[in-house]
Amino acid sequence: MREYKVVVLGSGGVGKSALTVQFVTGSFIEKYDPTIEDFYRKEIEQFASMRDLYIKNGQGFILVYSLVNQQSFQDIKPMRDQIIRVKRYERVPMILVGNKVDLEGEREVSYGEGKALAEEWSCPFMETSAKNKASVDELFAEIVRQMNYAAQPNGDEGCCSACVIL
Image (tube, rainbow, N blue to C red; front, side):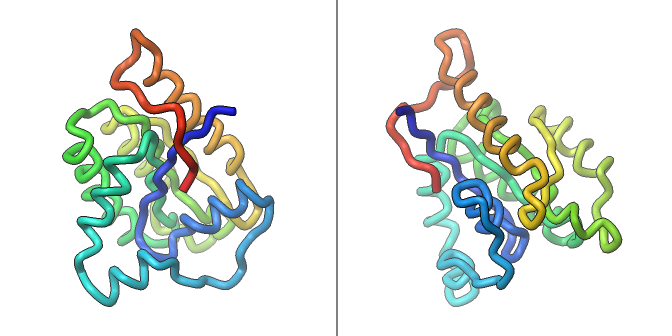
């Protein structure tokens, strides 16, 4: 069975772990428990080098912001720049994701804003809900499609075939 290394990036609290756990186990984490990277980022601002390592070894990237938090949308832009810098090419398998669509009444980032940024970056855009499992399976299926396309001999930069999902 082929395995893929997917790196999920975004600000703290946007739902990175919740999306991943929902995809892998089919359950939603109600309580926010900061993962180790969020903890260390708050404790010591040296996480960038650790993130570089994740990016270097990643095949595909899911960039997540919370559509109820405008700042998380702004925070995603330098993360994409970091991916391009570390990978050294523009055409990296990547998807921009606005999470928490179940909180529509609290929306701070419009669908149009997310779509426009994804078009600027030439990558797919989706809105998801880890809580309701809205578009979660489709998200991971799409990043696999992107990675498979990149791995084609006539595609862009390739990816390895023996990796794991983070």
